[in-house]
Image (cartoon, rainbow, N blue to C red):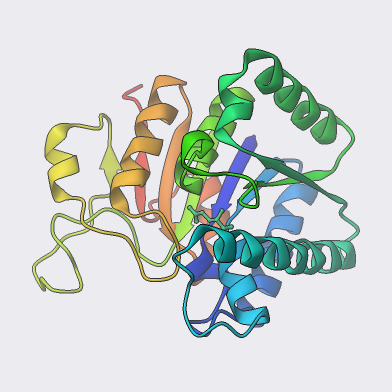
Amino acid sequence: MRIVIKIGTSTLAHATGHLNIRRVEEICKVISDIKNAGHEIILVSSGAIGMGVGKLALSARPTDIPTKQAAAAVGQCELMYTYDKLFGEYNHTVGQLLITGADIESEQRHHNFSNTLNRLLSLGAIPIINENDTVATEEIVIGDNDTLGAIVAGSIRADLLVLLSDIDGLYTADPRSNPNARLITNVNEVTDELYALAGGGGKQGTGGMVTKLDAARICLSCGCDMVIANGDDPQHLYDIIDGKAVGTRFAKEK
Ligand code: GLU
């Protein structure tokens, strides 16, 4: 299978903005193993801004664009250094791709991006993608990595997109405030009713449930399945790939 895995900031970092070492080590180990089993893996990783905040010892996530971009410049290095080191331990090679909305909108650049991705895969590398936050301003921003993950999955005809987040999946109500909230395990179509159920985002990252539903819509239109799952236990990835019930799976009725 060709699998895109999107890792959110809340999965990678502690609330302090510093790296969650145990979690990231486990994720890289499981992904390396899945790749060794013959699957193609593409990572879409958030965390540049979050990790920059930690490394620059900023008191909170910046709101102004220059500080956000500076934090991303620092954090992206830290992120790739970490992935390079951890995947290297399992003999896997990583490659970094940073893109903006303008690279997707331009047919030529989108085509170049897909070509590079496909070539990295045929060379056996693990492409690691993030938005190029150091230059992405409002006019050209993709905005969130859930959408970026879906665009990537569509561009390279992936079989599956997995969104690893700090929630177990899509619920019938906000599980943090409503004890009767139930996890929705299977979705065939992204409807307005589902959007009405989707609440706001987490504290550290950018995407919320709405961006995840947008991503699901893109995936379903491309014939790609999508799963929202909690990134707290990377071992779940094995079950997700085996098609077992974990989190919320979006798939067209077969
Ligand atoms: N590109 C952002 C970062 O690396 C994350 C965007 C997102 O999580 O949706 O910090």
